[in-house]
Every structure is written in C-alpha cells, then in structure tokens.
Length: 261
Image (cartoon, rainbow, N blue to C red; front, side, top):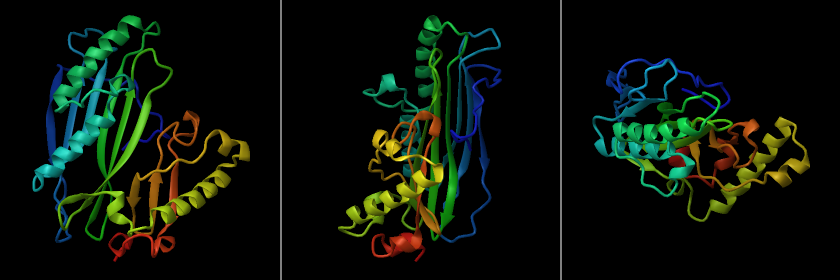
C-alpha cells in the first residue's frame, strides 16, 4: 500500500520488456461465509525501446474477484479512471491494464521531449483490502501519476465498498438513512474542525481552504473515515486529509447495516 504521506519511489528500477507477465497469487481463503475470494494482480511495464536505466514505468498492483467478474471489472474501471492524467480529463479511461500502459507511454514520450530535468514519467495504480467486517469489504484504490517536467506527482485515493452478501458495490447513498444527508454533512463539519485543531491551523486556513462535501467513505467497525485528495480542502503539502466520524455519532443517520449490525 502506498500513501501520499509516505515518499514514493519515483525512480523504480524496472527491467524487462514492455510487459512482464502478470503474476496472480491467491489470497488466503476468507473464513467468513459470504467473503469473496480475491486474486492479486501484479504487472510492471517499462517504456518500449528505452535503452537507458531511466525509463518511464507503469506499475499495477490490483485485485480481481473470480466469483464476481462484474466487481472485478468495476474495480479495474475505477482504478484506470483514477490513474488518468489531468490532460485526459475529457477522455474515456483505458479498457485494460495494457491499454493504460500504452496510452501512458505515448504521453511520456511527449513529456520526455519537453522535460529539461532528466526525470522520467511514472504511474502506480494499486488496489488493496483496507477493511473487512460484517460482510462488508472496503477496498482502497490508490493512484500516483507523475509526468516528467511537473513539480510533483498527483496522488489520488478512493474507497470501493462491497457488500459481500449481495456481491455488489455500495454507494454512500446506500449507507445513509433517507433524509439524513444534511445531518451527515454536519458530522463531517465537526470532524473537519477537529482535524483543523489537531493540525494546528488557524482560522485563515479554513477561509483559504474551506470544507467541501465528500462521499469518499470507508465504513470501518468503530468509525467512518472520509478521505480527501490533495487540493480539495488543503494544499499539496498537507497531503490527503482523512476525517473520522465515530460510529456512535452516526446512530440515526446511517443504516444499522453499516454500523456493525
């Protein structure tokens, strides 16, 4: 797992051809009766025809669910979308890992022609199990994309919540009781004020970086976590803030199914 708060290895030492065969490794069989088995997907791509030690790279560390191909496809699509660069905002995401790498290296070739600092482009896409409880599976999707010539790379995080009983994705609207969206936003605002205090920021900070609504929720056993990406409610240097809401505060706002019952 990689997080923005931990320095990422921009200079991965990857060797081999454009595509090193994907390595599938089975997870330990879950003991819960409804738990989905998952397979790890590991792929490494190196810029084609690159002869030096500094080559643009794409690294994939994802998951698939043999029992639920629709969920596997949804995870792949969401991760490929997360890994798109700002310049591709209006484009459709790639349809496969191979297609993503091919498109990324096309952009990297342009980057290398204009970059003067000798850096190389890099993309890392990762999906990993973040939490599992009460037949809920929370998958954390991470991307880190750096194009040569930029001041820094862009990290993004998104949670994918899966109901293992029904083998379907769960959206934030599924987790909240009807009519409780505003009440949830109030709890989020309280969590934001706690975070501001913990970080030691002053009132001017909240003026410059106001709280925005988010439904990027990870429902954990004891609390819900809401993660923001860089620039959403804080400058790049502050990383990806995570606001925490205690489970007890969500009583009457969230459905019991997502409060451990």
